[in-house]
Length: 307
Length: 108
View 1: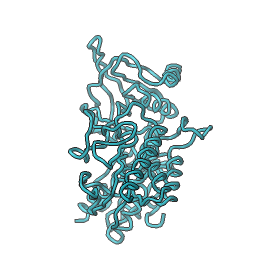
View 2: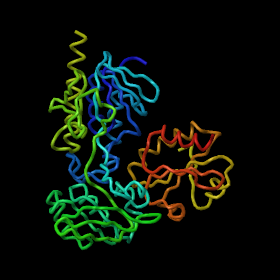
View 3: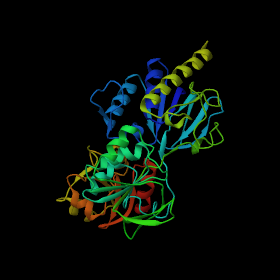
View 4: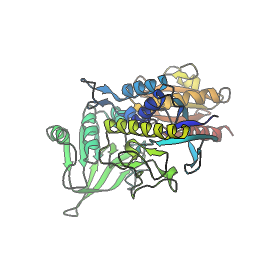
Protein backbone atom coordinates (compact mmCIF):
# COMPACT_ATOMS: atom_id res chain seq x y z
CA UNK A 1 0.00 0.00 0.00
CA UNK A 2 1.38 3.40 -0.92
CA UNK A 3 2.18 5.90 1.77
CA UNK A 4 -0.39 8.42 2.98
CA UNK A 5 0.43 12.09 3.35
CA UNK A 6 -2.04 12.26 6.23
CA UNK A 7 -3.45 9.35 8.19
CA UNK A 8 -6.37 10.13 10.49
CA UNK A 9 -7.19 7.77 13.35
CA UNK A 10 -10.87 7.99 14.33
CA UNK A 11 -13.85 9.25 12.35
CA UNK A 12 -15.76 11.75 14.47
CA UNK A 13 -16.32 15.41 13.54
CA UNK A 14 -12.67 16.38 14.18
CA UNK A 15 -11.24 13.56 12.06
CA UNK A 16 -13.70 14.01 9.20
CA UNK A 17 -13.06 17.76 9.10
CA UNK A 18 -9.32 17.08 8.91
CA UNK A 19 -10.18 14.71 6.05
CA UNK A 20 -12.14 17.41 4.22
CA UNK A 21 -9.33 19.98 4.51
CA UNK A 22 -6.50 17.57 3.71
CA UNK A 23 -8.41 16.01 0.81
CA UNK A 24 -9.33 19.38 -0.62
CA UNK A 25 -5.64 20.35 -0.43
CA UNK A 26 -4.99 17.38 -2.76
CA UNK A 27 -3.10 15.38 -0.15
CA UNK A 28 -3.35 11.59 -0.07
CA UNK A 29 -5.43 11.13 3.02
CA UNK A 30 -6.66 8.01 4.78
CA UNK A 31 -8.72 7.29 7.88
CA UNK A 32 -8.79 4.31 10.22
CA UNK A 33 -12.11 3.81 12.01
CA UNK A 34 -12.95 1.00 14.44
CA UNK A 35 -16.61 0.87 13.37
CA UNK A 36 -18.12 3.38 10.97
CA UNK A 37 -17.46 7.13 10.88
CA UNK A 38 -19.66 9.33 13.03
CA UNK A 39 -18.20 9.18 16.49
CA UNK A 40 -20.19 10.16 19.53
CA UNK A 41 -22.36 12.52 17.49
CA UNK A 42 -23.79 9.59 15.53
CA UNK A 43 -25.20 8.36 18.84
CA UNK A 44 -26.72 11.72 19.72
CA UNK A 45 -30.35 12.11 18.85
CA UNK A 46 -30.51 15.79 18.09
CA UNK A 47 -28.00 18.65 17.85
CA UNK A 48 -29.33 22.11 18.67
CA UNK A 49 -26.11 24.11 18.84
CA UNK A 50 -24.26 23.38 15.62
CA UNK A 51 -24.34 26.58 13.56
CA UNK A 52 -26.18 26.57 10.26
CA UNK A 53 -29.08 24.39 11.35
CA UNK A 54 -31.67 26.74 12.83
CA UNK A 55 -34.12 23.92 13.50
CA UNK A 56 -31.44 21.54 14.75
CA UNK A 57 -30.22 18.39 13.03
CA UNK A 58 -30.20 14.69 13.89
CA UNK A 59 -26.71 13.54 14.98
CA UNK A 60 -26.51 10.66 12.47
CA UNK A 61 -27.60 12.97 9.61
CA UNK A 62 -24.93 15.54 10.44
CA UNK A 63 -22.24 12.88 10.52
CA UNK A 64 -23.30 11.18 7.29
CA UNK A 65 -23.13 14.57 5.59
CA UNK A 66 -19.61 15.17 6.97
CA UNK A 67 -18.53 11.71 5.83
CA UNK A 68 -19.79 12.11 2.26
CA UNK A 69 -18.22 15.57 2.09
CA UNK A 70 -14.85 14.10 3.15
CA UNK A 71 -15.15 11.17 0.71
CA UNK A 72 -15.94 13.65 -2.08
CA UNK A 73 -12.50 15.18 -1.56
CA UNK A 74 -10.81 11.78 -1.70
CA UNK A 75 -10.72 10.55 1.91
CA UNK A 76 -10.11 6.80 1.96
CA UNK A 77 -11.79 5.18 4.97
CA UNK A 78 -10.55 1.83 6.30
CA UNK A 79 -12.33 0.00 9.09
CA UNK A 80 -10.23 -1.99 11.46
CA UNK A 81 -8.64 -2.28 14.87
CA UNK A 82 -5.27 -0.76 15.63
CA UNK A 83 -2.81 -3.41 16.78
CA UNK A 84 0.47 -1.51 16.88
CA UNK A 85 1.79 1.99 16.23
CA UNK A 86 5.22 3.50 15.75
CA UNK A 87 4.74 7.24 15.50
CA UNK A 88 8.38 8.09 16.06
CA UNK A 89 9.55 6.21 12.97
CA UNK A 90 9.91 7.81 9.54
CA UNK A 91 7.52 7.20 7.90
CA UNK A 92 5.09 6.64 10.76
CA UNK A 93 3.77 3.07 10.88
CA UNK A 94 0.42 1.77 12.03
CA UNK A 95 -0.69 -1.86 12.03
CA UNK A 96 -4.41 -2.10 11.53
CA UNK A 97 -6.12 -5.51 11.52
CA UNK A 98 -2.92 -7.22 10.38
CA UNK A 99 -2.02 -4.68 7.67
CA UNK A 100 0.76 -2.11 7.98
CA UNK A 101 -0.08 1.42 6.87
CA UNK A 102 2.53 4.17 6.61
CA UNK A 103 2.10 7.93 6.63
CA UNK A 104 4.09 11.15 6.65
CA UNK A 105 1.80 12.72 9.26
CA UNK A 106 -0.79 11.33 11.67
CA UNK A 107 -3.86 13.01 13.15
CA UNK A 108 -5.24 11.39 16.29
CA UNK A 109 -8.99 11.86 16.64
CA UNK A 110 -10.00 8.82 18.66
CA UNK A 111 -12.33 10.71 20.98
CA UNK A 112 -13.62 9.46 24.30
CA UNK A 113 -15.84 6.70 25.62
CA UNK A 114 -18.17 6.86 28.63
CA UNK A 115 -16.33 6.40 31.89
CA UNK A 116 -17.23 3.42 34.01
CA UNK A 117 -18.12 3.95 37.67
CA UNK A 118 -16.63 0.66 38.81
CA UNK A 119 -19.30 -0.09 41.37
CA UNK A 120 -20.59 -3.62 42.03
CA UNK A 121 -23.28 -4.53 39.52
CA UNK A 122 -22.24 -2.12 36.77
CA UNK A 123 -20.42 -4.67 34.58
CA UNK A 124 -22.70 -7.55 35.54
CA UNK A 125 -25.85 -5.72 34.46
CA UNK A 126 -24.52 -4.03 31.31
CA UNK A 127 -27.27 -4.59 28.76
CA UNK A 128 -29.45 -5.94 31.57
CA UNK A 129 -30.58 -2.54 32.70
CA UNK A 130 -27.30 -0.64 32.86
CA UNK A 131 -26.97 1.67 29.87
CA UNK A 132 -24.77 4.48 28.60
CA UNK A 133 -27.06 5.47 25.70
CA UNK A 134 -30.47 7.04 26.28
CA UNK A 135 -31.39 7.24 22.60
CA UNK A 136 -30.63 3.53 22.15
CA UNK A 137 -32.25 2.09 25.21
CA UNK A 138 -34.76 4.67 26.47
CA UNK A 139 -37.70 3.14 24.57
CA UNK A 140 -37.18 -0.18 26.41
CA UNK A 141 -38.06 1.52 29.70
CA UNK A 142 -41.52 2.76 28.83
CA UNK A 143 -43.49 3.57 32.01
CA UNK A 144 -40.64 2.24 34.17
CA UNK A 145 -38.65 3.97 36.89
CA UNK A 146 -34.99 4.61 36.13
CA UNK A 147 -31.97 5.93 37.98
CA UNK A 148 -29.68 8.40 36.23
CA UNK A 149 -26.18 8.80 37.67
CA UNK A 150 -24.48 12.11 36.99
CA UNK A 151 -25.82 15.66 37.13
CA UNK A 152 -23.58 17.20 34.48
CA UNK A 153 -24.87 18.47 31.15
CA UNK A 154 -24.85 15.00 29.57
CA UNK A 155 -26.70 13.40 32.46
CA UNK A 156 -29.39 16.06 32.61
CA UNK A 157 -29.81 16.37 28.83
CA UNK A 158 -30.16 12.62 28.40
CA UNK A 159 -32.54 12.47 31.37
CA UNK A 160 -34.76 15.06 29.71
CA UNK A 161 -34.84 12.83 26.64
CA UNK A 162 -35.75 9.83 28.82
CA UNK A 163 -38.79 11.67 30.23
CA UNK A 164 -40.59 10.86 26.95
CA UNK A 165 -40.61 7.19 27.87
CA UNK A 166 -40.04 6.54 31.56
CA UNK A 167 -42.41 7.02 34.49
CA UNK A 168 -39.91 8.62 36.83
CA UNK A 169 -36.25 9.61 36.96
CA UNK A 170 -34.19 9.39 40.13
CA UNK A 171 -31.12 11.52 39.43
CA UNK A 172 -28.11 10.87 41.66
CA UNK A 173 -25.26 13.41 41.81
CA UNK A 174 -22.08 12.99 43.86
CA UNK A 175 -21.58 16.73 44.38
CA UNK A 176 -24.01 18.86 46.42
CA UNK A 177 -25.14 20.68 43.26
CA UNK A 178 -25.87 19.95 39.60
CA UNK A 179 -23.13 20.88 37.14
CA UNK A 180 -25.31 20.97 34.05
CA UNK A 181 -25.78 24.07 31.90
CA UNK A 182 -28.34 26.35 33.51
CA UNK A 183 -30.91 25.99 30.71
CA UNK A 184 -30.89 22.21 31.22
CA UNK A 185 -31.07 22.46 35.02
CA UNK A 186 -34.13 24.69 34.75
CA UNK A 187 -35.89 22.29 32.38
CA UNK A 188 -35.23 19.38 34.73
CA UNK A 189 -36.18 21.18 37.93
CA UNK A 190 -39.49 22.23 36.41
CA UNK A 191 -40.25 18.72 35.19
CA UNK A 192 -42.62 16.59 37.30
CA UNK A 193 -40.83 13.32 36.52
CA UNK A 194 -37.62 14.15 38.43
CA UNK A 195 -36.41 13.43 41.96
CA UNK A 196 -32.89 14.66 42.77
CA UNK A 197 -30.45 12.99 45.17
CA UNK A 198 -27.62 15.47 45.55
CA UNK A 199 -24.48 14.74 47.56
CA UNK A 200 -25.10 11.00 47.16
CA UNK A 201 -22.55 8.32 46.35
CA UNK A 202 -23.64 5.23 44.46
CA UNK A 203 -22.57 2.08 46.31
CA UNK A 204 -24.03 -0.69 44.17
CA UNK A 205 -26.42 -1.68 41.41
CA UNK A 206 -28.52 -4.61 42.56
CA UNK A 207 -30.69 -7.30 41.02
CA UNK A 208 -30.95 -10.97 40.08
CA UNK A 209 -31.18 -11.43 36.31
CA UNK A 210 -31.51 -7.72 35.63
CA UNK A 211 -31.39 -4.42 37.47
CA UNK A 212 -33.83 -4.09 40.35
CA UNK A 213 -32.44 -1.24 42.45
CA UNK A 214 -29.58 1.12 43.19
CA UNK A 215 -28.04 1.69 46.61
CA UNK A 216 -26.65 5.15 47.38
CA UNK A 217 -25.25 6.83 50.46
CA UNK A 218 -26.01 10.36 51.56
CA UNK A 219 -22.54 11.85 51.94
CA UNK A 220 -23.67 14.35 54.56
CA UNK A 221 -25.59 12.04 56.90
CA UNK A 222 -24.04 8.67 55.99
CA UNK A 223 -27.50 7.16 55.57
CA UNK A 224 -27.99 4.64 52.77
CA UNK A 225 -31.07 4.38 50.59
CA UNK A 226 -32.15 1.75 48.11
CA UNK A 227 -33.99 3.12 45.07
CA UNK A 228 -36.05 0.56 43.13
CA UNK A 229 -35.47 0.91 39.36
CA UNK A 230 -35.54 -1.16 36.17
CA UNK A 231 -32.84 0.82 34.44
CA UNK A 232 -29.66 2.70 35.34
CA UNK A 233 -28.25 5.28 32.93
CA UNK A 234 -24.70 6.36 33.71
CA UNK A 235 -23.05 9.65 32.69
CA UNK A 236 -20.11 10.22 35.03
CA UNK A 237 -17.73 11.62 32.46
CA UNK A 238 -15.67 10.45 29.55
CA UNK A 239 -12.33 8.70 29.22
CA UNK A 240 -9.99 9.24 26.26
CA UNK A 241 -9.26 6.40 23.85
CA UNK A 242 -5.49 6.62 24.10
CA UNK A 243 -4.31 3.27 25.47
CA UNK A 244 -2.66 2.49 22.12
CA UNK A 245 -0.61 5.72 22.36
CA UNK A 246 1.14 4.97 25.65
CA UNK A 247 4.90 5.40 25.22
CA UNK A 248 4.35 7.06 21.81
CA UNK A 249 3.14 10.59 22.53
CA UNK A 250 2.86 12.61 25.71
CA UNK A 251 -0.44 12.11 27.57
CA UNK A 252 -1.62 14.09 30.58
CA UNK A 253 -2.49 12.51 33.94
CA UNK A 254 -6.01 11.68 32.76
CA UNK A 255 -4.80 10.12 29.52
CA UNK A 256 -5.72 12.96 27.16
CA UNK A 257 -3.11 13.83 24.50
CA UNK A 258 -1.05 16.84 25.46
CA UNK A 259 -1.34 19.43 22.67
CA UNK A 260 -2.16 23.12 22.47
CA UNK A 261 -4.44 25.05 20.14
CA UNK A 262 -2.05 24.24 17.26
CA UNK A 263 -2.92 20.56 17.90
CA UNK A 264 0.78 19.62 17.83
CA UNK A 265 1.70 16.70 20.10
CA UNK A 266 5.09 15.92 21.62
CA UNK A 267 6.00 14.08 18.38
CA UNK A 268 6.69 16.11 15.20
CA UNK A 269 4.12 15.37 12.49
CA UNK A 270 1.61 13.91 14.95
CA UNK A 271 -1.48 15.97 15.83
CA UNK A 272 -4.32 15.48 18.30
CA UNK A 273 -7.78 16.85 17.55
CA UNK A 274 -11.24 16.87 19.09
CA UNK A 275 -12.25 15.37 22.43
CA UNK A 276 -9.05 13.31 22.77
CA UNK A 277 -6.95 16.47 23.03
CA UNK A 278 -6.30 18.12 26.39
CA UNK A 279 -8.68 21.11 26.33
CA UNK A 280 -11.44 22.84 28.26
CA UNK A 281 -14.41 22.91 25.90
CA UNK A 282 -15.43 19.73 24.11
CA UNK A 283 -18.08 20.52 21.52
CA UNK A 284 -18.66 19.61 17.86
CA UNK A 285 -17.71 23.18 16.97
CA UNK A 286 -14.37 22.96 18.79
CA UNK A 287 -13.72 19.52 17.29
CA UNK A 288 -14.17 20.73 13.71
CA UNK A 289 -11.90 23.70 14.50
CA UNK A 290 -9.17 21.32 15.67
CA UNK A 291 -9.57 19.22 12.52
CA UNK A 292 -9.04 22.31 10.39
CA UNK A 293 -5.95 23.47 12.29
CA UNK A 294 -4.29 20.05 12.25
CA UNK A 295 -4.89 19.49 8.54
CA UNK A 296 -3.41 22.91 7.71
CA UNK A 297 -0.38 22.24 9.92
CA UNK A 298 0.08 18.78 8.36
CA UNK A 299 -0.02 20.43 4.93
CA UNK A 300 2.80 22.79 5.97
CA UNK A 301 4.99 19.84 7.00
CA UNK A 302 4.37 17.99 3.74
CA UNK A 303 5.02 21.08 1.61
CA UNK A 304 8.29 21.72 3.45
CA UNK A 305 9.38 18.12 2.81
CA UNK A 306 8.60 18.45 -0.88
CA UNK A 307 10.42 21.72 -1.41
CA UNK B 1 -29.25 -4.80 2.57
CA UNK B 2 -28.71 -7.89 0.45
CA UNK B 3 -26.64 -10.15 2.64
CA UNK B 4 -28.67 -10.26 5.83
CA UNK B 5 -32.10 -11.72 6.51
CA UNK B 6 -34.91 -9.44 7.60
CA UNK B 7 -36.25 -11.33 10.63
CA UNK B 8 -39.68 -10.90 12.20
CA UNK B 9 -42.08 -12.76 14.47
CA UNK B 10 -43.36 -14.85 11.54
CA UNK B 11 -40.08 -16.18 10.17
CA UNK B 12 -37.91 -16.24 13.30
CA UNK B 13 -38.57 -19.89 14.19
CA UNK B 14 -37.92 -21.17 10.71
CA UNK B 15 -34.91 -19.00 9.89
CA UNK B 16 -33.19 -18.93 13.28
CA UNK B 17 -34.38 -21.61 15.68
CA UNK B 18 -34.63 -24.36 13.04
CA UNK B 19 -31.50 -23.32 11.14
CA UNK B 20 -28.87 -26.03 10.69
CA UNK B 21 -26.06 -23.45 10.77
CA UNK B 22 -25.40 -20.90 13.55
CA UNK B 23 -27.24 -17.60 13.17
CA UNK B 24 -26.00 -14.17 14.25
CA UNK B 25 -29.00 -11.96 15.03
CA UNK B 26 -28.59 -8.18 15.22
CA UNK B 27 -31.26 -6.54 17.40
CA UNK B 28 -31.45 -2.88 16.33
CA UNK B 29 -33.70 0.12 15.81
CA UNK B 30 -33.74 3.16 13.55
CA UNK B 31 -33.40 5.54 16.51
CA UNK B 32 -30.15 3.96 17.70
CA UNK B 33 -26.93 5.64 16.49
CA UNK B 34 -24.54 2.86 17.54
CA UNK B 35 -26.81 0.37 15.71
CA UNK B 36 -26.37 2.39 12.52
CA UNK B 37 -22.62 2.23 13.09
CA UNK B 38 -22.48 -1.52 13.64
CA UNK B 39 -24.97 -2.28 10.82
CA UNK B 40 -22.41 -2.18 7.97
CA UNK B 41 -20.01 -4.27 10.09
CA UNK B 42 -22.74 -6.92 10.45
CA UNK B 43 -23.23 -6.81 6.65
CA UNK B 44 -19.52 -7.51 6.17
CA UNK B 45 -19.74 -10.45 8.59
CA UNK B 46 -22.64 -11.82 6.55
CA UNK B 47 -20.50 -11.83 3.40
CA UNK B 48 -17.45 -13.23 5.16
CA UNK B 49 -19.36 -16.14 6.77
CA UNK B 50 -21.62 -16.86 3.82
CA UNK B 51 -22.29 -20.62 3.75
CA UNK B 52 -20.96 -21.15 7.29
CA UNK B 53 -23.38 -19.04 9.30
CA UNK B 54 -26.50 -16.95 8.70
CA UNK B 55 -26.87 -13.32 9.68
CA UNK B 56 -30.22 -11.72 10.37
CA UNK B 57 -31.59 -8.46 11.71
CA UNK B 58 -34.50 -7.86 14.09
CA UNK B 59 -35.97 -4.38 14.12
CA UNK B 60 -36.93 -4.12 17.80
CA UNK B 61 -39.41 -1.36 17.06
CA UNK B 62 -41.53 -3.64 14.85
CA UNK B 63 -40.81 -6.85 16.77
CA UNK B 64 -40.98 -5.87 20.42
CA UNK B 65 -42.07 -9.41 21.36
CA UNK B 66 -38.88 -10.96 19.97
CA UNK B 67 -36.75 -8.43 21.84
CA UNK B 68 -38.72 -9.14 25.00
CA UNK B 69 -38.44 -12.90 24.60
CA UNK B 70 -34.63 -12.75 24.46
CA UNK B 71 -34.33 -10.11 27.18
CA UNK B 72 -32.99 -7.40 24.90
CA UNK B 73 -33.21 -4.05 26.71
CA UNK B 74 -30.08 -2.50 25.25
CA UNK B 75 -29.22 -2.14 21.59
CA UNK B 76 -27.34 -2.98 19.55
CA UNK B 77 -27.34 -6.52 20.95
CA UNK B 78 -25.98 -9.33 18.80
CA UNK B 79 -27.05 -12.84 19.80
CA UNK B 80 -25.57 -16.00 18.30
CA UNK B 81 -28.07 -18.88 18.03
CA UNK B 82 -27.02 -22.49 17.59
CA UNK B 83 -29.37 -25.48 17.50
CA UNK B 84 -32.31 -23.24 18.39
CA UNK B 85 -30.73 -21.68 21.47
CA UNK B 86 -28.87 -18.45 22.19
CA UNK B 87 -25.28 -19.47 22.94
CA UNK B 88 -23.43 -16.14 23.08
CA UNK B 89 -24.10 -12.44 22.85
CA UNK B 90 -22.41 -9.10 22.34
CA UNK B 91 -23.91 -5.92 23.79
CA UNK B 92 -22.99 -2.60 22.20
CA UNK B 93 -21.19 -1.66 18.99
CA UNK B 94 -17.92 -3.57 18.65
CA UNK B 95 -15.33 -3.97 15.86
CA UNK B 96 -15.67 -6.74 13.28
CA UNK B 97 -12.86 -8.79 14.80
CA UNK B 98 -14.75 -9.09 18.10
CA UNK B 99 -17.83 -10.46 16.34
CA UNK B 100 -15.74 -12.80 14.17
CA UNK B 101 -13.99 -14.21 17.25
CA UNK B 102 -17.28 -15.15 18.91
CA UNK B 103 -18.66 -16.65 15.70
CA UNK B 104 -15.47 -18.66 15.14
CA UNK B 105 -15.76 -20.08 18.67
CA UNK B 106 -19.31 -21.23 17.96
CA UNK B 107 -18.34 -22.67 14.55
CA UNK B 108 -15.32 -24.63 15.76
